[in-house]
Image 1 (cartoon, rainbow, N blue to C red):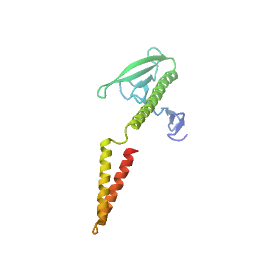
Image 2 (image 1 turned 30 degrees about the vertical axis):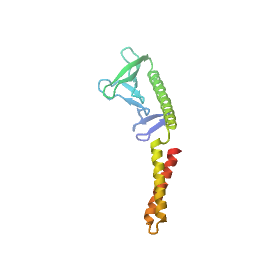
Image 3 (image 1 turned 45 degrees about the horizontal axis):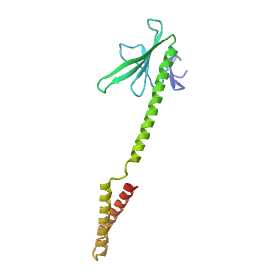
Length: 182
């Protein structure tokens, strides 16, 4: 067996040690508790911060427990509250129950984000491209620089740099008007 080999199978990583014994088989979103008080469960955590827990060993009643805990509270004070709790005779059933609830929440969040993006796009499209004051100012500046350029071109001793400067300004304001109108 290859040392510390990892086998990928349907979103799960199976890790083996030197002797070929299975070390872990976590999914990407699966986590294990780190607190000393509750070391007997694992959980999935969805994008909202909710936990989908299952016990790793049989409890006093001889069953595996699965719990869905929702995150309540503000950023300062977060609290996980029990929403659903079920008991299963098989560990796989408890894990499957938690996984299904987790995937359902993840799918729901994707729909929510998609709808949010659509609403944002509609709002952006409905907004006027340019405000009236900025349009008026851009038009007046364009007229002003065209007038100055024309005036400098008629003079005999006009500076080339000044004419180029006015040409740049005219180009800028024409482009700005195109963006604001279009």
